[in-house]
Length: 250
Image (cartoon, rainbow, N blue to C red; front, side, top):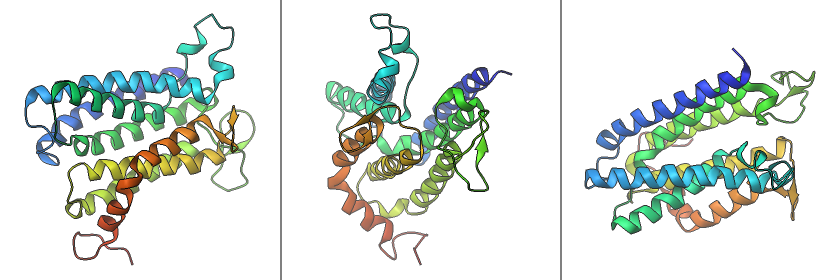
């Protein structure tokens, strides 16, 4: 099977598995997230619409030279997308949908497991897609470097991301009872992932640099971290406080 086809298969699998996990999670791990079935529909529509738009906008910001090549021909504008943009766009979409529907409860905790598993599955597809996916890392001399087809051993940043997501979820799940405020598990997930992406982008090729020497995706990560900054001290206390969860750092 061609790498592009493999990527598409894993992307569709990520959506399907993520959706099924969401249905299970909202009943078991986050039963208080939704007060009514209509709330699920509103947040789902907001998440899908916001994620689709955010994924495209992030690509345009991160690599404007490729996105706007041959403009006003729109073909290149429709080619790429970004998980960072999808997450931030989905966040905005959900918040707008909740405001329209009058939903006041925090719904984010129901998305932590589905997003983690879906993103891991999607990154397997990115890894198998090789150079065409543009998610590989810079050349490295480390023994686990991978040749994606250009003769250079590169950081397998897709695998780094999978490892990070699984480790992060293990910690968040083990400490789930320490998060007293609804939605803090999701805030911890988002802040942790945005920080990871901010750092890992330094070992990935940059297609366009903005002031400060950061890529467009890195600046989006900075913006997302600034949004979650008020909650970060509370999240850190929940993660590292003793006696309120199964896992304790040593």
